Image (cartoon, rainbow, N blue to C red):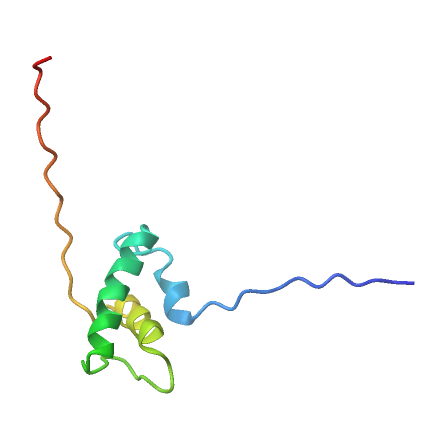
Length: 87
């Protein structure tokens, strides 16, 4: 009896594939998901999609918008409070 092993092959969206080298968003998956989450809330609230929406859900459209650089955003560093040297 012969058995054949099947391996699942992940299909990556072309925009995601191209963005894997993008240091600004794909270097930090949490940042990508946080930006896409905020955009998905805007889309659910009635904002117009900046990429072709098709039949996709707002969360997927938001990720596509971020990866296509259709969403403007800035990243600011949070200042770290100085520690007091008092005991």
